[in-house]
Image (cartoon, rainbow, N blue to C red):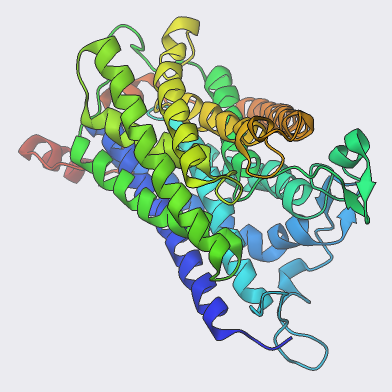
Length: 434
């Protein structure tokens, strides 16, 4: 197939937009923590880029899209170091079915792996060793993200393949599942995966000093709003780019993404106003992310009106869910569970109700809903178990927690030898440390 330069340009731009999301997340998370740990929080996002890109080139792509191993992951040696993923035997660039060079697909997919790992960091802010986080990013990407990407998008057990779970439930037609699961851009692979990982780590690592007893308010709400804006902008590459070419499906995903996000802001702020008496900027920013998360798996499957419905539901439920950590006593610092796990479940399961083709509310029966629920739960269990194993291994070896002195005094200064805001006293302390 000949290269389509228009589709190739679109996918390169989409990959760049998704890459922008991780620095955007750094601002979003950085603004939400206290001033003494903002640099550490932002560094956790930036180091995710560094580590994940390297391991993705070596074995991540192959584990995600290489030859199938038991429906669970791709063979890491099949295209190790991207061998066989760039050129054919004649030295020509490999071209996919959309007319896009395969190497551009690698560029696009690695950005998804990066942002997924970075999302988890918000659940464990203010209290973990930077070196342990670095080790976790490589391990978790390898044994959780890459396998789940293969299972859902690479023809594995959670895909629409004839050997997948969906085919076992409702049979096959023409060599594929009759009722195929839908995850357009990452409801299971990205958000449920990261959300349950954040919950598991928060439980393993434990609460911040003073959690529930002293205020831990965002130190810079303009940073939070800036981060939300960058995430929203980058998310058009995330969702519309998942059409893999510049076509009507990409346009539908763009409109659905915007509609659901706008509706989620309204749903969150109404909930906040009724519950707390104020509609806040933090609520608006959080509503943006909740809407983006929920529409991610559904962006190509809904109509704009049903996208609005999904967005409102996500805004309300996520606004309510962020308070669960106080009720159940787990310290999910920046609401990864309330926004990404709950939002990912709302979006993934909501497809079963609202999909234009196969949705229960459109008279197409319950089969797609059953498939979506099963796939969501299996992804949740898989990621939760894998994360628990990694989390406990790292706790027993490297250790997760910084010292109490570092946590109370400021993780930025203790770990990185820097402070974000240089007062005279802060500057003098930095000099002494150096």
